[in-house]
Length: 294
Image (cartoon, rainbow, N blue to C red; front, side, top):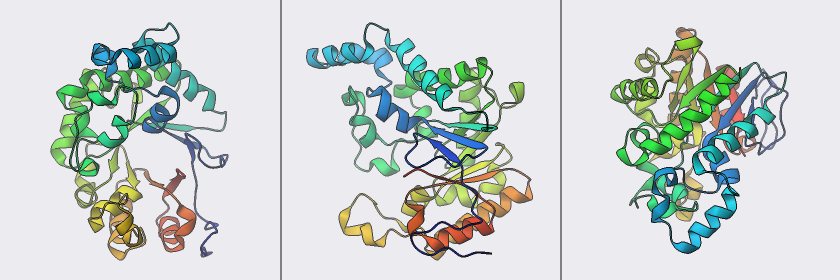
C-alpha cells in the first residue's frame, strides 16, 4: 500500500465528488450533496421563513423580496436547489446522496432571517440533525428539505438520503418516522437512508444503528470535535484538533468494520484531508469512500 505524505493524497484512497464543489471533481461514480452548504451559498435565507416571514424587519423583507425575485418562498427554495443539484449530476454519477442540513444554530443565524433561530450557548452540541428535524420549530423547514429530495426522485434520479447527527437508537426510530411522514419511507421504491456518524455514541452503536439504515457516513471533523471534547472554532484549541488522534482512528475502524461486516457502504466526510496522511492511510486501509469538502 502506498503511504501518503503531508500535502499529497494516498494513491489507493477512493475519492467521491461533492456539492458544493470546494475541490476539483474526481470523475467519481459517487456524488454527495450537502444541503447546508447549498443553503448558505445559493439560498441565503433561513428555510423556516417559509412560515415565519412576517417576523422579519421591513428592511429584511425587502432584501428577501430581492432574493426571491417575485417567486414564492416554498417554490424558490425547492426549485433553486433541485435545479442546482440536477445540473451537477453527470453521466458517470451512479450513486447520488443528499445529506440533510447538518449546520448548527450559529450557522443558521448567519442567514437572512436567522433571528428566527434560537440562540444556544453551545451550538456545536445543540440542535443538529435528528434533534433539529424533530423539533417543532423546524417542522416546516424539514418538510422543505424533504421536498427537494422528493422532487429529485420524481425527476428520475435515484437519490439516497444521509441523516446527520444520529446520536442514539431512539434518534434512528424517530427519523425513520419523520421521513415516512414526509413521504420518504425507507425502502419505498428502493429508497436508501444512511446515518451520519458525528459523535462517539453513534460510532459505538454503529452495528445496531445499521439495522435501521442502509449505510453510514462518518463526519470526521465533527467526530474529532466530540471525541476530543474541544471546540474547533476556539483559536486557543485549534492546535489540539487532530483527526489523526488514536481515539478517532479507532472509532473510524470500528464503524468501517461494522459496516463491512453487514455489507453496507461506509463513507467519510473530511476537511483538509491533505494535511492528515495517517488518516488517509486509515481510510484507504478500511476501504472508505471519502469526500473532501474543502
